[in-house]
Image 1 (spheres, one colour):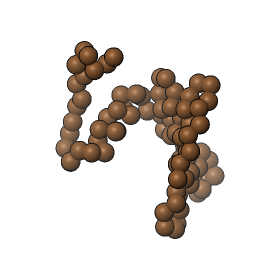
Image 2 (spheres, helix red, strand yellow):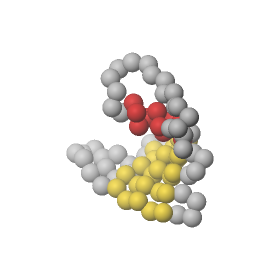
Image 3 (cartoon, rainbow, N blue to C red):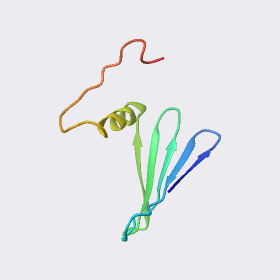
Length: 82
């Protein structure tokens, strides 16, 4: 299950684990213009862990989900950036 909320400066996506137990903590994704952050509570330390990705890293992650094992580099043509 997930939810999507539009805030003033970002879109917030919350992923809720509904799989088999043990369940993972919710993942909160903040999509800003300049970066994307992923946050998840670490129950061992009771602290929120945060990862920040650039828009290019998000693009590469999305592409990597559908590719076989290997090393890749995406090259944009001038008309792809618009």
